[in-house]
Length: 175
Image 1 (cartoon, helix red, strand yellow):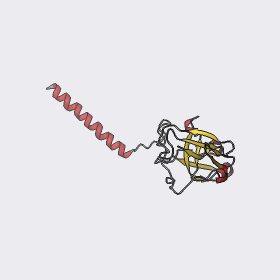
Image 2: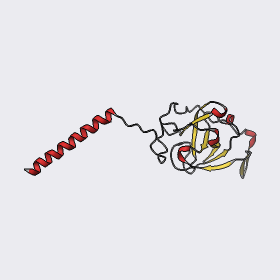
Image 3: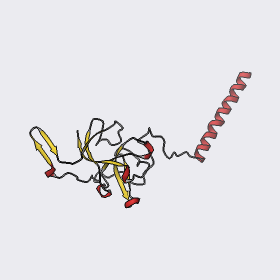
């Protein structure tokens, strides 16, 4: 008899706790501003739409700067660096683990345009470098800001990007 009463009491407490939890979650929704640095693909919701397939990176290498020989290819791009990518999935299907890219350091703000794929150091990830597409640019001079988003991400990166944070801009992808 005591165990039946105890079971009814515990069941009632459990039921009331669940009911209270549902009521509170509807009254006070929890909306995290940013989940964690480990979750690279779920930052804040974008006020800009995902980049249109028609938004293309700036053409940085002319046809005359590409030389194709029987045993090699030469791209005349001063200060070019080679880049490889971690398997985050944020830029698929364009970039994935094993793909290679050629990048260069932009010298001025006008070197960056919407559609460019940039490597930058976000403040929220310390020394990690992200590579995402520029989806918007606003301001000039000290007020210049770019906004980026991974092609496969539903959300824009959680912070505006200053020109000083940009490490490189991609001008070629090699598979």
